[in-house]
Image (cartoon, rainbow, N blue to C red; front, top):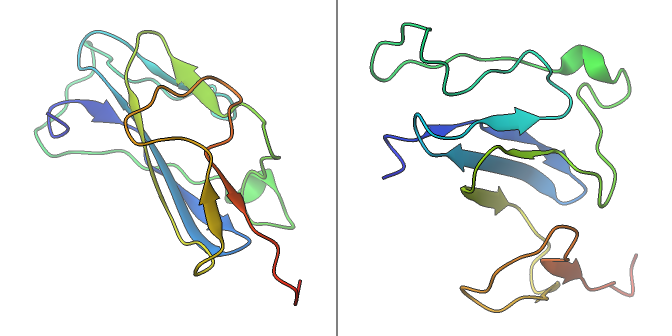
Length: 122
């Protein structure tokens, strides 16, 4: 299923290492919107795309300090015109994650997915 749908891979870093958020939109149905990229267009039927192709954009000029577009806790990154899914892949501190949701549960906008437990050293 995911090989046929359109997606936008947002890669970056957070306090504990690598972070990736991949919104996956249904092909020819909905669109993915990223708030800090007004030029991004998904599901564009007029654009000729060979199978396996992709386009790349970088946001290095968005923030001189972080070499990218900094987002703050709870800030909206974007959304979908119609329902879809989001894949999160990230490095986390070992043994310091406490999940706030159960497996296969629905997540609401603004709901915490996990919390990082404070170490005595921090």
